[in-house]
Amino acid sequence: MITNLAYIVFDEETKRMKIGSIHPGVDLEEIQNSTGFELVIPEKLIETKPPTKEEIKILREKVDPLNIRKLEVLGGNKRADLLEDIIEKEIAKKNKFPDLLR
Image (cartoon, rainbow, N blue to C red; front, side, top):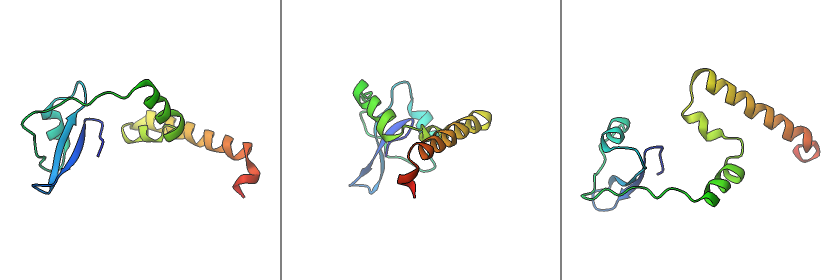
């Protein structure tokens, strides 16, 4: 499981979730405080390797071109603005390819 704070894996031995790696700039306390259950903490914590420029490009252009995942972390006016932008882009797609959506 990939979160905004860490990469979490399933520990076969304990049958619990375990920190696989911590994202750059995040500390263990922040992860523990943001998790609703107790994580297995490995003896040696490693830092998550940042994505390459190509991986980021694929994520932004192919996987989530409407930036929908960002809704998970936004609130208030910023969330409303992004939702409005997503809806406008969806309408533009529908108008661009009307025969394909029937």
